[in-house]
Image (cartoon, rainbow, N blue to C red; front, side, top):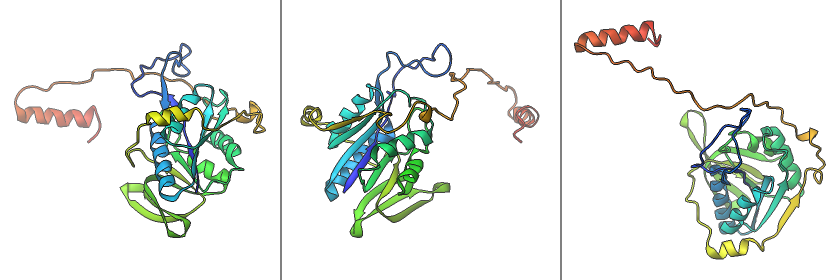
Length: 260
């Protein structure tokens, strides 16, 4: 079974974020980057599927030179090879554009299963998986909570629906799976895996190799600005007799907060 896993580099969870001077995004200089959390679970899911069915796992990542860190980590965990679309022109790209470039990079590979994180930790579009399935003409399942191979070349997928409903379905391949966090225990890369990651094949591609110009991948989503939440103190202590305090609270909820 040929399995593809999409990984994205994002600022590490404990990174101290600062807003860029123009307010357009965070200041990325000096930040440490890591694989987005959902994508990390996706790598583990892909590796477990490989171990149960055979085949190989390829990781694909879009981004500049810093994306190589996440690629090497996925290879060290056990992935077999990597595809790296090396460009900084997609840093703020919309979900449809990201999916279009990913599809162009892997369309001739003939993957049976494509594993993508449900959403990234930074932009959180939650739409790259479905859009990628469209471009690759594959089925798609979102919010995957578990998966296993079953007879007939199908995957048994447990996933979440609206209103916290859980459905289990057998889906044929090829299929794109949007993996949720927490579906497994992610392995650590072994020393042997880390040492061997550098020797695993990596295919480097550019937007020009894929037939795209900068205009072709210009984002259709405009970021107006980012800012930290403003702190405000609106707590009011109501003292006195409990019964009177309760009446005062109800009055304020009706007339001031307007929630009753």
